Image (cartoon, rainbow, N blue to C red; front, side):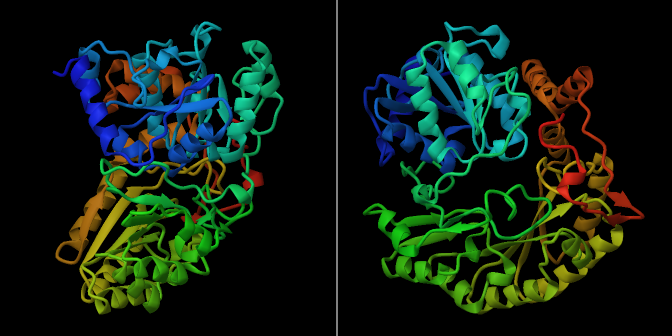
Length: 510
């Protein structure tokens, strides 16, 4: 088991391999924490963007801390959680800020607060303790499970709002006065003071794009510079928090600006966003990067946008396979989800993958959608047979989890035994045709309970974390705290019903 010296050495080794790390003394230092390990945190575009924005604010600096790779070893060394940049204990900072991407990281917030030597519950802290702030992608849907642990939630796009927050923290030394002020301002939620969640903030387009500050080899996206060619999405998929109604839909960035931001010497660039292939000048951007000998990865490839030209450019940019999404198992379900990806489009993508010599096609899929039948799954198996005769096929399958602040808010979670049965049906049908990789229905259910819950779901997360964090611990904790998702009214006669968002409880209700 490593001692404190060994932990510090491991952090120093990672720092030595980073490019772009920021160091400076500041009147207002912020411990910027990610409630998952380093490799995940450093792959987060939002986390890296806020790190840079804090450093850009006069008199402020950010220092990073992460959930340890081996929490038990860290605890065994009796080492307080410290930051990477200065090795200063997180509990000594005046501000501790969390970037939270998804629901299961709520337990990571509890872990990090405890490792820092801070009371986990907000009500157990006072003015002697740091101000605890949280933001990140989770705030676009339902951040209420974080309410028992944080003093302030920053809602939505914080590229600009972080500067307002730092100004107010620096200008209002009295903690109670600061919280009272923030409670009345748009973009903030102060637990116990703000009556309900408000609209998420929208950053000025001049602050786009979000991009990496630090390039490191110690992530899954090894030594890759990440940048968003556009923010948001112009599509209306009913299950998605980032659909066209969120913050004005898709806002694109000119390729010339994107190219100018790529640091000298970077050989790998990742294009990240909710709808990368919807950028109208994506081919121009790819051609320019390829001409510089840069390898390019891209997320959110849409089947209807994967033209022969685009697949060819991705192949030239180093792609070895193509990943896109079917989401619904059948054309009927895809239409109901407003996904609109057709069989013809998926077959055309498969033909282009083969034509350009790529290794395989990967399709993402959700199971357990309201109104889904065995016939829908059988339609998928038939389509897989057709695709697999063209190109090797891999399915990435996840149970459907309804999110707040979407038209499908409140849709039920399919019982775990039924999801298991559906996965078994798919495995049998796809045997010899396609590889199936599925995520856990049990942990998807935990995610669902947090996604649909309120502060009591956060307290249950704390209980489950303290009990050891097994699935049984989560089940007991949800039951003990009385966590219940609000009931669905969207399934009628086996068909998916998607009324307007206005017909459902707002995101601020539990």
